[in-house]
Amino acid sequence: QGAWGEFILESILEKSGLEKDREYSIQESFTTPEGRLRPDVIIRLPENKHVIVDSKVSLRAYNNFVNAESEEEKVQYLRNHLTSIRQHMRSLGDKNYQSISENSPDFVIMFIPIEPAYILAIQSEKTLYEEALERRIVFVSPTLLIPSLQLIKNIWKQEYQNRHVLDIANKAGDLYDKFVGFTEDMITLGRNLDSAKKFYEESMKKLSVGSGNLVRRVEDLKKLGARANKSIDNNLLKRSEDQGNLFD
Image (tube, rainbow, N blue to C red; front, top):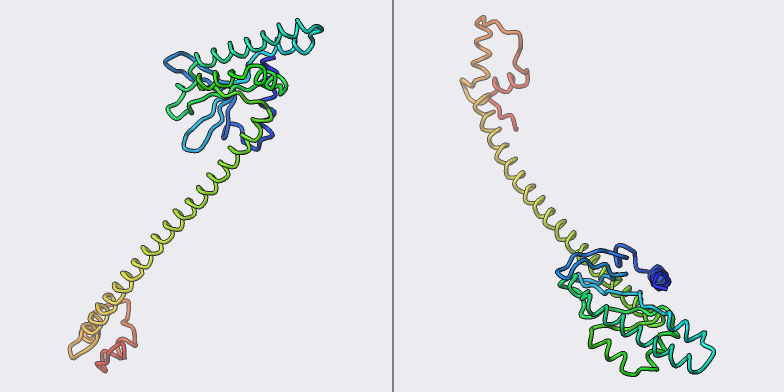
């Protein structure tokens, strides 16, 4: 019956839209001061919070109640059913699942997989729900669990949308910063180009402008017999002879 409860719980989780090993995990093991704990299901919430779900409540007494042939048997099996739920409730409280994480909620969900078994227990013992809350345990049936999971799914949907918006904002900020850095580099490059152009103009003036400029003086050496394998550019020679500015 415990395996049946786990099967029903996993089936509901699979159909909830939550993703296994992302929004929830099954049979995850933890080491705590109280010992080794292995809850049936941990449903994760934003901000590192968790909801713990247990599905191992025994429904043997309920099954006997359904199949009882006499009213006396029904009364006895109903009493056994309530006792079974209380015992499991106490067992969950003693396990202290809350110690798994500092961000775990202050309660554990006790999943009763058969709807009539849940209704029978709650209707037959009015104080049962309050007893569970005192132990920080909440009873749920499939009918109650399904909308709860839908709510959690919507919470995650909103969380992912917020993360998406934040990611876009961060990427836009990074892009803007890179663009500003690029414009600063371009401005610096332009200033350096201006400086380089001025340096180039001054150097070319020294090289080819004015009487006794370097181009004419070097060319005169060749005319005097200096041995050379290369020749100075004709345009540069002409400008040096005319004492013109290269940028005219």
